[in-house]
Image 1: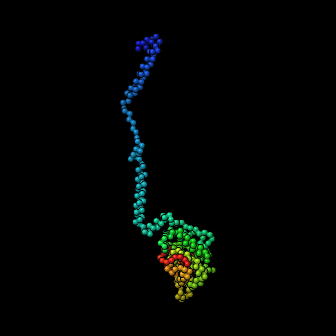
Image 2: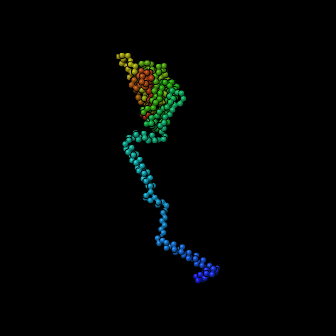
Image 3: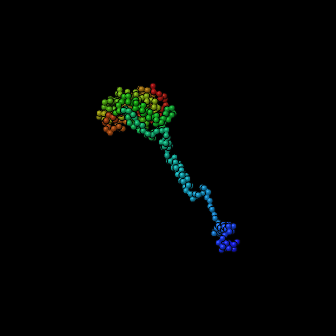
Length: 299
């Protein structure tokens, strides 16, 4: 065939059948080179590694650190809670529990209108629920309602200079103040004025329905009696507190609901000027914890 090919080349003529054969032989030779020649280029086997999803991080990933940090934080909070429970008293624990109780408000309320008690009435956060005569706990919502009722009763007879309502650790404190033009008692004695009788008549129904023990405290100024007098501001303040007690009983308050009647003389002045008439006052305190039994309805 090669001789024929050489002969054809020499003559310048190529037989078509020969040309077709030669082309076919060249194609086969090229295919053999591609297949077998490439296989001899590298004797190293080709290794393909495939990684499954989820195995990329392995034990070298950071996800476990987040979980471990959460665990350590939770354990720290747990042991801190155990320490607090061991280091606090029952009363302190109750105060903490009440603080986080959403049913007990601790924000202040504001009085409305132009009455004498208009403004903020601040609530002490440690004065929370207490047991009523019926065994039901009163929340600060009930306390706010009680203050509003006291304010309304006081507004019937007194102006904004003659009364104040505050909240203390002991309970709700209602201060009935004297002024030069509107005394609660005659100067130097314990005879109540018509104004005090009117005020006690108005507030006694609120005291009765509150279900709280009532403490009455008398206060005086520091003006002394004449020299040699055996009757002092101590006796006067106690007698005035007793006069307020008798008025409350007259208007329906039960004897059992009165817890204390106290005279403080001039030892707890309301203003810095100890001789001021504002220091001559009666404090009616609705104490937090009831300690008596009996009907509570006002008659």
